[in-house]
Length: 216
Image (cartoon, rainbow, N blue to C red):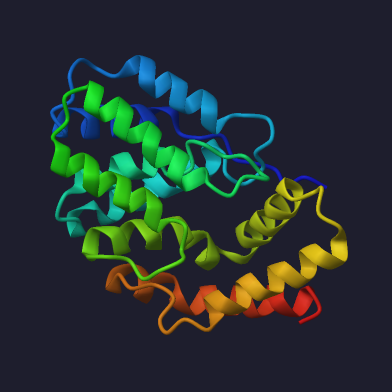
């Protein structure tokens, strides 16, 4: 059964976009690009990597943006981090970063900021340790679903399974256990102190629960 999704907060999305677009010194209002991004996040093949996920990320960012050295860059990277999402793709982050680079360059954003934003997006591959506090903040926000209250975490697990509905059950369970165990083995899971204090314990409980449920 597909998990129910909360509707995104349209006012938060609009406020977030206008704030980071202006702070980056981008030309115009960027409304056409924002609409294209929203349409991308709403594509039918998505189950977890949806507007709900974007909205949840931006909600946490609003509470923690004072921690960022370049908050507009972190915020824009959140908008783009899953902008391209092919459920069978291996280069979604790279394609999302390339899209961001092209659009922000066309809007006149500075080269250094664009480079950092692209690096932030690539960090959501979760293949290496984040580089710097801003990148750590973005990665922690992206992974914050692991520390969500149990009902939302279980919804997330259902959504992930639905996105990989084409994968046979035995193979999905094995691969999913491996991924969740890798997160559980991290010390700590979250590098941003504020986020770690808030959700690290719950994330560990959720991960252990899900691993056990998957037969691990």
